[in-house]
Image 1: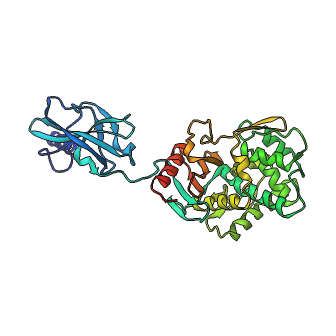
Image 2: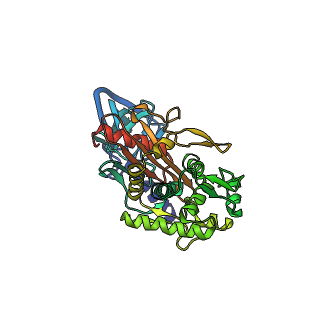
Amino acid sequence: MKVMGQHRLLYLMGIAVTFGIGGLIGHQPINANAAGYQVVKTTKVKSTAYHRASSKGAIFNLHHTKKLHALKKFPYTTWYATKKVTLKHGKTKSTYYKVKNSTNNVKGYVWHRYLKKGKAPFGLKYAKAAVAMDAKTGKILWHKNMNTPRAIASVSKLMTLYLVNQKVANTSATWKSKVTTSYSGLKSLGRSAVYGNFKFTKNHYTVKQLYEAALIDSSNSAAIALGQWVAGGSTPKYNRKFVKLMNKQAKSWKLGKATFVTANGMEQNALRGYGYSTPGGNANRVSAKDVALIAKHLIADHPSVLTYAKIGSLKVAGQRCYNYNNLLPGRKYYQSSLKVDGLKTGFTDLAGYCFVGTGKKSGHNRIITVVLHDANEFTETRSLMNHVYKNNLI
């Protein structure tokens, strides 16, 4: 009898969890597997905005026999209620709202206590860190974990490209200057099936050619070659010198959340096999805010970067370079009103998908957005830009 009592207690506890704290009577959500339900009353209501009251709850079909969606998957969705329905199961009655999202592709019935009246607050579901910045003033327009240093993958190349521009602007070097690319490890990196995307078939390329390959095609080998050139050489010794220059520049900008160990954003455990390593941690770690500041300096001091960043595809030294920014014209997530013309994508397993976006909508200052470790980097960047403009934050 004792064992049976324990099972019965667990069974009743399970029912209590299913129906919600407070017992089995009065305005509780009905078990999705319950039989003998009844639609007691249906009332049309004026379309009213709601958002989820917590991460609990789900969207069901009318008779509450099938769970359609978990509300936790929609943390920033506004739901519009058009009907109020009373369901009865045994002696229990519960009030539900028929809801749909703004695009009308998700709809169903939700228990009223899982909803809170009003539009959902804006947020990004997938980005681990994000920021929107006014490119002219540096004002932060929206942020999420913006001061947390994170691995940033190829977004790191923005600092490399800034220092290349600085050398061309402030020394006798030109865009036609020759960059030596004869180091065997560098050539091997360019041929890598995983990390290579611009092969060094020659021992010299111009600064312009490698700049285009690094920015448009995110070439890892081109970024290292350019960094070594900036530092005055063409071997790993000069790569280490260049990384010091990256950190020196970050310090001069007072980027307290920025630490660089590679010129291209690859992690050191991946680069060591090609003969490259520097003192410090395994990955570049920079906060979303500091990434935005790097982009701000690059665009302000060297605006010509946008001439290259908006190019969708370009042949460089006989090789096709492809821009993976899918907010550019003709791409899947393009939105004409946003006027996106840059800036840089990035990905490693550690960093996840990263993206620095920028555009200048008519009548507004230029915007810079950063999303780090974001599985939907383009849709969330687009949402962030639209949020800033819709609410006149810039």
